[in-house]
Figure 1 (cartoon, one colour):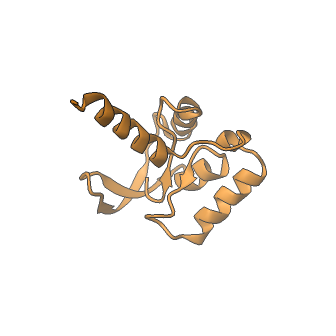
Figure 2 (cartoon, one colour; figure 1 turned 90 degrees about the vertical axis):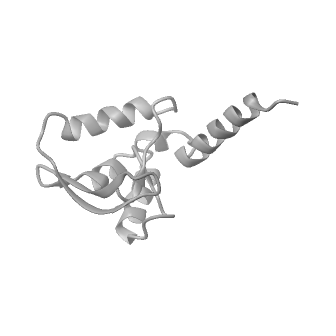
Length: 117
């Protein structure tokens, strides 16, 4: 989804985030406006379902971060700030780990495990 990053399943709030997304779009018809492909070849776009902007819902409910590195839309930052202030979803935790940091740490741990000395 363009502009947001959600916790990985093995992270705290990962399953809750996935469940929130499934509740919004599971078994329903969605519309995806594709804007680009990322460096991994995945399509990146905005998702709508039942006249709801899905990224907005995920940010407002506190189940995703605004991915500021790749998306500068000010409303995304606003929705994340509001969810943080209200301690919604993952923002109920004092300092939730960012998914991009978690993925980096996982990659580094795998690299460290396979190094031969």
